[in-house]
Image (cartoon, rainbow, N blue to C red; front, side):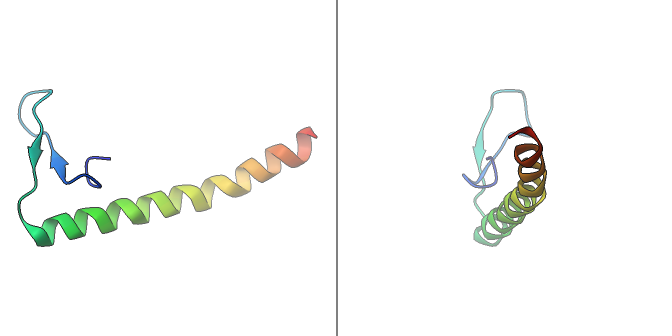
Length: 55
């Protein structure tokens, strides 16, 4: 979620800073989107198998 909202917290806990570089924001959002799509693609077959064997 940090990448989607262009935030980072590399200092003390609870401190949120904005990512100011536009190229880095774009790269972060692209990586977050790829991670999300990968997670969905890997979890859907698992959910289907569980659903199929428990009905």
